[in-house]
Structures are given as structure tokens and as C-alpha cells.
Amino acid sequence: MSTGSPGISLARMHDFLRVLYEDHHHSLLNFATRLTGDRAAAEDVVQETFLRAWRHPECFADGSSARGWLITVARNVVIDRMRARTVRPHETREHEPEPVPDHAQRVVDALVMEAVLASLSYEHRRVLTELYYNDRTYSEVAVCLGVPAGTVKSRTHYALCELRRAFDQRQIR
Image (cartoon, rainbow, N blue to C red; front, side, top):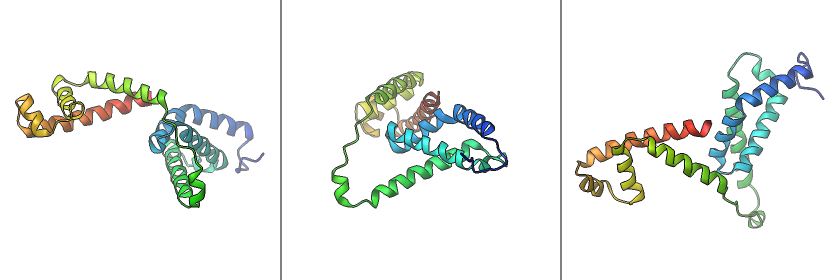
């Protein structure tokens, strides 16, 4: 089977792809899962992405970022799949099974969220708890905590930024 590039031996190509897969598989899978919302679909996207890398090794010859190329290709694969679904006739959509939520991923996400929330300062955690878990408005939280509404908004902003950063770091590991 040809690799699409006459100057690269099949053995070297295999080694290159193995290293590429080991270095980028997990982060690419997390990225595709976030885009698709479905772990199985994300695995298909990652497989298609690495297949395209195998078919086009010349894309890596110039020393450009393999990670950037892989993420771009994965994003394009997701977009292509979404477009393909929208052009299907209506009849076929009726017979598609409903996606089954990935319970294991929800459990992992909940555990990560709990750990990340615990890493926030008390003030930031309290604001988020009042806003999102107790379903209060900024004004209600301000009264409850005895601080100005602007302080609640500021704490919310910084808490959510910290939450996103910490959650993304834990997801990649």
C-alpha cells in the first residue's frame, strides 16, 4: 500500500504515525468530544483525522505544527459530518436512533467539576453556588452575601474563568 509520498518508506511512515498518535490522540479525542458531544462520534472523527494524516504525510514535511494540523482536520471532519446530516432526506432522520448520553463521561465530568469547585476560593465558590445551584439573580446574591451587585458580577467572571481553565487542564490529563 502506498503512503502517497514516494520518498517515505512504509516503516518510517508507520513509526511517524505511531508517535503522532501517541502524542496527540488524547487531546484530539477530548477536542472532538467537545465538538460532537458524543464520545463514539468523536472516536470516528479521530480515526478519520489520523487516516488523513496517513494519506497526506507531506503536510508534516515542512515542520509545521502537527497538533494544529490535526485539530484543523478534526474540526473540518466534524463540520463535514454535520453538513452531511443536514442534506439527508427527512425520511432517513426519522429512523435514526436517539443518541444515548454517555453516563460514564457525565460521572467523570461531575467528579472533575467537584474537584475544580473545591479548588476555588470560598468567595468565588459561594457566588457560583448561589447563582447556579440556588438559582438566584445577581441582586439576590448581593443581598444574601452582603456585597454590591458589581462585586458579585466580578467574582462570577473571575470564578468562571478559573473554573474553565482548571476544568480544561483536568480534562486533558
